Amino acid sequence: MSDLLYWEGRLVEAEKARISPLSGASLFGESLFESVPVYQGRSLFLKDHLRRLEKGCRFLDWRMPRPREFKKAVALFHAARPHDFMIRFNLAQEFKMPVGPRSVSPLPARLWAFIRPLGHDPLGFWPPLGPVGVSPWTVPEVTSVPNEFKWAFYMMTRRVYRRHPDWKEMVRVNSKGFAVDGAGSAVLWFDGKKVLAPPRNWVGLQSVTQKKVTGLCRYLGVPVVEKPWRPAQVLERGELIFAGSGVGVMGATHLGG
Image (cartoon, rainbow, N blue to C red; front, side):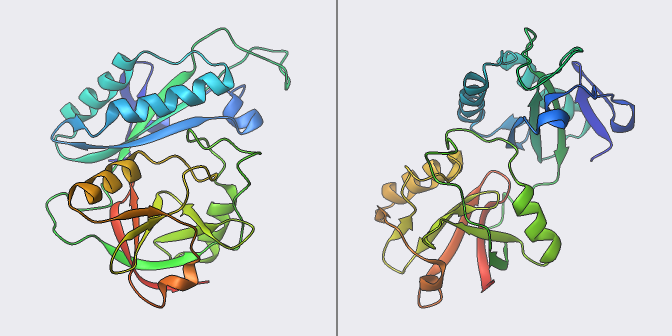
């Protein structure tokens, strides 16, 4: 699946794509991305994901590619690989010399995309399970990092995964030890009676899937409460649940770290 890349409006072999060394992603670690599941050629909640991506473009003063470009990427991948998959859209700016921290580009952000297998079985009743850890690195406070879009600030998360390759997900906490989000998804705790979600005004990445899952819970009559909680409380009762486009819905077999 990883042999093809959507690049400049068509699918090319990944090794043949050439990204400029003057990309803001490589120079400044400045990029945006969205991962979207695609079922039978139809992308799930694409409008919601593009709306979140647009917030990031507004924050960075970028011109966002038109929605039809994202839909074209999905269609081309589905034609080449007619089965369910996860597509990751990536955006970054490219510059011309001379370039520095104050450089801006009048061009729309560069879009490229690739696909990978789904992290879940769409037809399976039970969610995937796996060991989960608690990150030793705290999440920045909401006053320092906006939480309305996804951008590439996963260096600490990647470092933890290198040290704990068996962890399938992890809980990220704030400076007070309260759960904020997962490494790649929203984190929820079902204590046996209600679903507890971290307060939305915290710095956790705004989750498209969490909004859908909590809405479904309310529809089914399961109470949803925004309330701070610590990972250790999950060991006493209930279930730890991760909800995100990258994993679908995942449960934990045990909690480490």
